[in-house]
Length: 292
Ligand SMILES: [Zn+2]
Image (cartoon, rainbow, N blue to C red):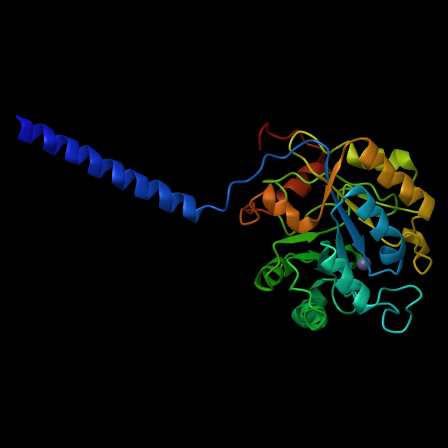
């Protein structure tokens, strides 16, 4: 009898050990546990390597403890016009400050179908400059000029990008700078929409419209260019206005992160089967199935 009992106990122990091993390997196979998405979570992004990102934006972000991504390109007059564009030393310093440095292609080249054969070279040229200045290869990309071709996604994946940010189009027209919040699980991580893309005529009301969408599991991604941006007046944000925006986010208890930090909240490996379905659904205005 004792013998049978001890055999049964032995079986239970063996079964427990087998269960524990299975649970352990399952845990190892999963990405580390994701945090739940709080309301008032925003992502701050700054495009085109503008000098004001260092002189105006950087001190404000540090004052409020905000994270952000700076998308770097050598396009426009970056190489010669250091009155309007960042230096590589400043970009390196932004990295050492803890901000994310993202890739915006060497020549600010749109990822249109005709340009895709050059996308790899355009991305690697920026990565090489970053490496020479002590900045690791970016995991975040921003589409120059919001030009996107479906076959570009696989190229971006192969280049090691986890996330790519677009504008508010095609759901909204480019001109007003309006957009939708990112819906994790439904938006493809390489097609993240901008909830707002600041324009010179924007007021605090536009920023509120964009950021009020950051609730119920949605994340508002904000896109800025220079503050100020005298070279590109159509996407310029006056300094005082930008200070007002950041103060508002701080006073209202928003949490501001970089694009790469999305990996704490969402599994970037999970990609919808049809990347364009959510976009088409939004454009058609059809009601969506709850929870999907
Ligand atoms: Zn740009």
